[in-house]
Image 1 (spheres, rainbow, N blue to C red):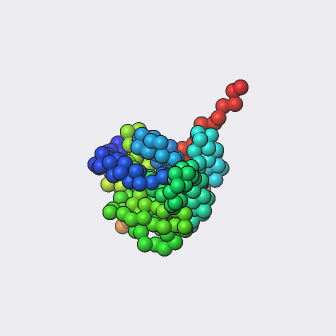
Image 2 (image 1 turned 180 degrees about the vertical axis):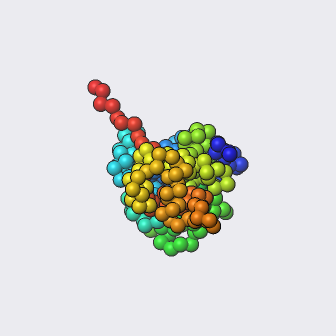
Image 3 (image 1 turned 90 degrees about the vertical axis):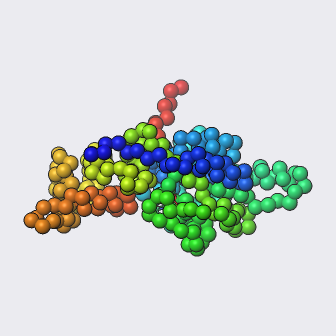
Length: 289
Ligand SMILES: Nc1nc2c(ncn2[C@@H]2O[C@H](COP(=O)(O)OP(=O)(O)OP(=O)(O)O)[C@@H](O)[C@H]2O)c(=O)[nH]1
Ligand SMILES: [Mg+2]
């Protein structure tokens, strides 16, 4: 059984170059993070890549994360000096707030143009984020119509134009796909269970085993409620069997189809059907002096 999750997207150098070229065109960067894993879904080189461009942090999929932790993360990033917004790209919640933060962040640039006697132009922005974090969904939302393709698997977006959003904002229609941190296996595990890395790169049995352990430790009641369990079995295989039994995942001879149970559990966890989860938590700010 493959224990480790190895995924080094082949085109990091190319991605970096393309993003670098696009960056020259924009005033502001919108960095999408997954609100469930704001640290694990960040790119290890984001500072280096975006350099001195103003950067706005959007905690996307906020509907899937625990609201209280999203608040704490928002405070955390604000304390670090970032403009930050909680976002739900699919429903559009938070997009107005995001657009006004983008305009605010770019105001000094536009003012400088005006001071030079250049006619004010719309603010230009681009979206950056790791695969499957919701870049295309946000573009679609901002467009108001679904003309940019989105998908529930990483790696859908290929091929660029400006999208005009209202009168004051232009968005590059090609988001920058950042590579995730994959060296740390804890991070890689969180990326796998939230759906940020392709299924082919990890062993489902191993990852779901980790998910069951995590759930029993932190979110046990989600399992009992969702699958109607009276107890949480001490053993992960037994627990998985119970999930499968409650979902009628049976094979001939009355055996439980564990693979089917794994897929149900993963899908329901990812889509928030089990409940809202936050897997990265900011360190408590210490109040020493
Ligand atoms: N629940 C929820 N799902 C979201 C949200 N934003 C995006 N999604 C879902 O996440 C999946 C990936 O969204 P995309 O917009 O395709 O992500 P992407 O960043 O463009 O992905 P790549 O093109 O593969 O890099 C889709 O199934 C979306 O419906 C959100 O705010 N909440
Ligand atoms: Mg996309």
